[in-house]
Image (cartoon, rainbow, N blue to C red; front, side):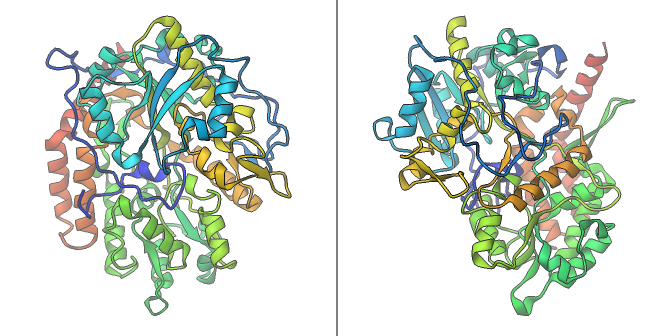
Length: 557
């Protein structure tokens, strides 16, 4: 992967921070040979969706969540974690194999891993997990598919994959509709807490095939230095009434003599949300017509604004071209005081030790990083963090599929449960101790034991928690309280396009981001934007539009 490869937005929402997130993808595989079922454009039927419900195991949050999707907030970890599953879910089951990606170093093997042993004891069965580094996962997935060696449960790669996903899933994976659709999901109450929008993304070929690793709906709009904004007279983001005012502010925040610039790496996503642009497509409900984000005046305005900011010298030199593999470098630059704004995903904000709150407090206590909220009267929030990915169950008997779903239900146990504690902190006394406030603090062994990627088997919306900063929890909760109501529905979640499924976050995304960087940096004129639209549509965008519109018409019949 070259240094100019763009940063995939979803990569920024992964758990953890300070990790190099290279996104080199294996080539798309041809699914199931020439005889594979042809994927079809379709409306995703609501009848396939599980009837979701808020999961309550008896813990009282410090900050309430909402039915609309604002997560619960906790200032302290429960002193006595409660069970979220019953009995031994895997009692009598043969060992289950699972392959997941990881953003951590390889975990200790079962025999040297107290947390792994305790989890299997609670499950009542054996789980053989292969943890694959995120940068290598696409290649590993391709190898497993080509060699017909997929495990019982596996995560679909975030990039790469197969070129006919619906056919691959139909040929290889268990249809989960009979187990999870409607009220059937009640047998798996932790999976039932996964939001419907995430389940929508697991429908392919008219069937429910995936188990979502759910996230918070929106990944946020990056982070800013509130202390620097305040020095420039902006004590509330509400004072930034439009993008022109944001440009003025950025010019004030750019101080080359202090080696300090307004923006680190990029801001186009935040600018696009502030302008009111869609994240990928806009659907006119009345006509059923789809408009590409690049075709909208709002997205063009965002790109023009980014170009203006770059020309004014507001970007830290050299950071616009940084790749995903350099994420640790450019986020560390922000943490060390080199910029006033950085685009990154919300999960990184409160990450223990290395997140923005903890790391910047250790560097300089006057630094006040806070989540950014899109600004201006036309601002929207993108529904771009509904899930990290889906996991899938390999075809098996009904009994076997039910056992694997029981494992996924265990993995999706909510914050504060015994299951969640074991997965995230391990065994008390061995993997973690309690600090003065009663919050878990990982031991040296614990930092290794908990890297087994159980949490990537399935997940409901994560709660907001920090052992370091009550104020940080409040900032995140307040941001979601503002952004969740601003979210615009993503039509891609409601309708299926085979072309979009295979190219939307792959080749088309790369084409778009590479061209935008050239335009924003001034290496190409703004007129190249129109050529980008033509190229994008010619290389799959127009075909995807037609399939989406066909799906809308099918849904009306």
